[in-house]
Image (tube, rainbow, N blue to C red; front, side):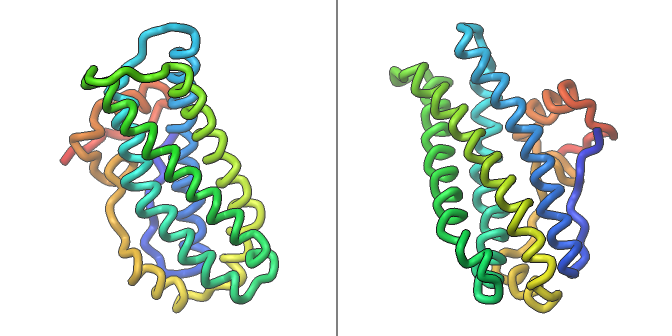
Length: 202
């Protein structure tokens, strides 16, 4: 499987294609997270530090950058599309639930790694599986209803405004260079999904 990378073309179709590509990358992480939480449920040992890295990426890149792009685009197109206007509250609620659950997961997993606080294993598993399920519901809603409306309703000028408010930034896991923090996580994804190409680390 190839890592899918952002294409820097300021057209509406290309902007939506980039969001879809980012979804495919996110899906790989969700599969990995599900397998780790299932292993926890079975009583098996897992690499909690790797889970911390995965959740850090989900919060600091997916949450802060990917979701911010989507939210700005949704805000603009909701003024032109009744379908998106009707779905806007649910989309915002999904992003809020994802952000809150993700923040709790990262903080709790960090406590597990540091061994400085007791945690409820069952709550960790339930929250983790709920988080991945909510992410998938959000991506499905966006790809079925939102992204087609973005393609039709936003021109290149609108995307340029969005890019000015949320400037493009290199993807530290699936981008041209893998940030050293995510080196082990990237190697795990290569092993699981057979990502092609030599990784360059920074």
